[in-house]
Length: 411
Image (cartoon, rainbow, N blue to C red; front, side, top):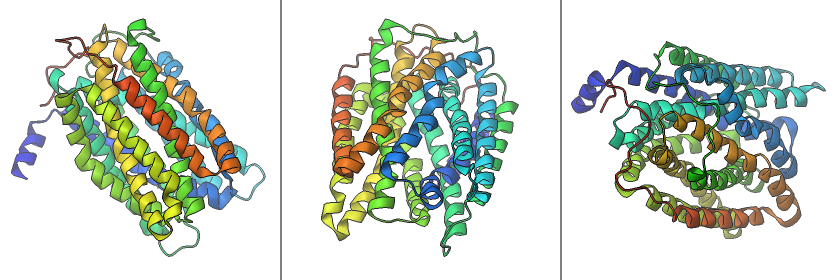
């Protein structure tokens, strides 16, 4: 404990402010992700096809993230992150107001609009927070810093998930409006903290868009990640809700379990990225995801033990997102200039959402026509393809991270 306290005292104020902002965004995310799918089921009674179709507008901001961050290219990353926090706040507060008027004829329209607003905030912040994290670390420790950032966010998610569990336990219908209002307030605090940060690690203006032939493998990995990610985000919870009839309190508990594991595994995975390299980590990621897909698809055949297999798949899948930091460090190693990193990360997010905004609609139709297991069998094929392409990663000998490192970066 003394060693940890000493590290905090030596840490840069910028780094501490950044971690604190991530923590408040994590609380907001914990409130949202542990309740949103149950809220859709309780308030709008969606089938798998309608739930899949909803991902098109929900993921549209992710597809446009390169354009959105390009429009904000004149601002430093910390300011973009602050704007994202404000958008997240407005989206969550709006969903809270929709829940208070869920019976109105316009509730569906407003739900979609505020969901898109929330998604805009959470997607625009993704590439800039990764860029900020890497600018607050020494070149040889970028993976470790990204892992620490993921761990901070996961630890804060516990608070949001615990809040959802406490106010939902014993209720037939949780007070969703309160969950979203509180989550919105947390995002607002995060926005204020991001705005308080100075311009970190940005010595030159960012280009609005970067497309280079040399980055083709990063683009392919982003596309495959988008397909894999959205199948799990959309249909993983839907398996627990529709196949195993699990309430919102179950997702709160699973969210806490996932966050506890992520707190410890994310820094460790970050260290492994630095030690093993991106190729080994992403190949391993793809192979483990094949097993998770098969678990989701066939858990219902196991009767009573099946629910625990589905729980394990849900938690393990969330932990596996820590492997994805290897794509960011790979890009930073092959980038030709520091200003390419954020722009290319933004384009990567747009590419992954080009798939993730359309694939769930197809998955929903497959679910309704053939059964949910076939959705996950398809996911297993995508995970295997991800491992195949990851095996092609080659980092030039002696390559260094492209992003600039400020003198005050903490160890």
